[in-house]
Image (cartoon, rainbow, N blue to C red; front, side, top):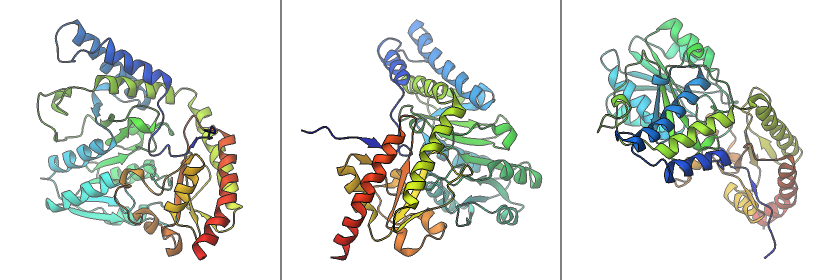
Length: 388
């Protein structure tokens, strides 16, 4: 069988782990495999991985180690932040604010909280996917207890003005909690929660070349939050259950690697993005959504292909060894039009014709060129086929 070129442009769905991540996880699973709650040396060895990972993460954010809670990933982190903080602050009020382009793990959690009696305001965004500070200011009221706004949108790469949002919230009511879903931002940006007014922040390991099934929630020490998982009282009662030692070890190593030569890594991602955007813009009937410069995320490009269904183009690219996604992979089992694309006002003809290309540290310019070459070949054929 002929060797097929493989190009993986779906890094916002998940990433290949760094070799060093794989190695430390194997070590934690085969040599230092103790339970962190055990009092013998095997337990001590396992606890060391947890401690070192927590130190690495806290150092990357310039926060205290005790403010990091390990979770099973971004979805749990978002659930813990929203449900835990809302329930803890319920006596102060019942109003929560978010946007219309949040990830399903925020949007659906908000729907659950609405069923519990909380009132939710969903802020609109402009054509670039950016939330209005004026709309946020108007939405905050006496019974507002929490605002949740993502740092980087997972479908189109819009970057929200998080520091400005944090400053605005705290200038109106310092006691309002500000939660940030940073799952597509962490590792791409240097984030300083204390300076940016962030009280709670969610991160997932497998978006930064770490393992699946592990993430963390930053919880400022001043924040009162109720746990949503009960049991043996691990992690100071914040998240019971035996710690995922190999996962945490891999996450800590991924954090170390992703922030090594960070500026250089980010510039490489922007170079790939610029190359793809320029090539896509030269193709007939292709619309690149949102901002594409340095005021957008470095790793995500969203493009609509007039006259071609997204699913058809996705599989045609797959046949040529190119892997991309249509919208968010996190909800791919639930077909439907993206709320983000509707939120930014994408015209009807492109709603079901949009693909997301997302880069990681292992991608190259040659892969971008190959992808563009294949698209130039495929698009006219697929359009003729659809019209026939």
